Length: 280
Image (cartoon, rainbow, N blue to C red; front, side, top):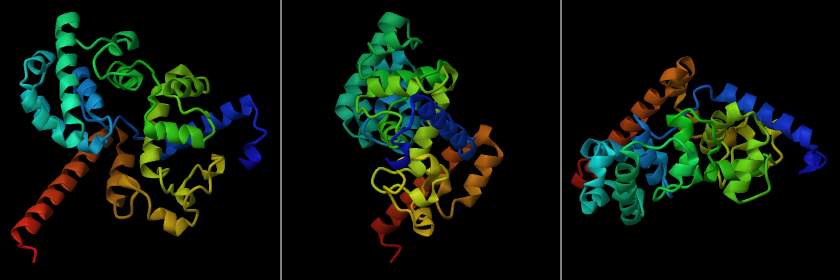
């Protein structure tokens, strides 16, 4: 880790908080990237997000919630119909079973209302601490650290923890920040992991917080090559989307949704063209 080898506990905390401040400037529009309108929708979407991407989940939840909009409706749903609606998220049989069991628990034990505590949420089928913290932080305004694969990777690269255990990581990172900042720290770190600090080839040369990162050099350090690795609104060709999100961070989720919907339409049109041969 070089110059970070002798970092004190106080130095780590100061560096962590500086990273958070600089990420806040880079992503003033950071938000939960699962689309939802109420706690139940967020709970279901987060359960579905296991082992898949938020983009894929967002593509199927509108149809799922149109058909089964409440815990009661989902509790009464034919499991094969739920399986078909969520098939593209992977592990769809296990997820469908969890969703029906979860919905039945909500109806039977919580009058169809999503509970607002970690202790209650983690007793629901398919719900662990990560899902509980996502729901509490974004649907109830209760601060929490969301430890997903992106967060684990970046917390370790930043030197915030040396653990691979999600519960230990949550504890280590929580100790570095004020409680009120936990949810937004999570969003910013995950945003950074999806856009710049990738798992296989981080874009180190295009990273604005490289000067604060002990893992600088693990990825592409050439600025021109690194810029080509950026994703989503930071990717080359997405300048208009980025400008809109920066200009109106309150509407950033809507802009993202519209962009993803357009991408899905383009992909569907390309698929139709290839199937019919009209593109030949």
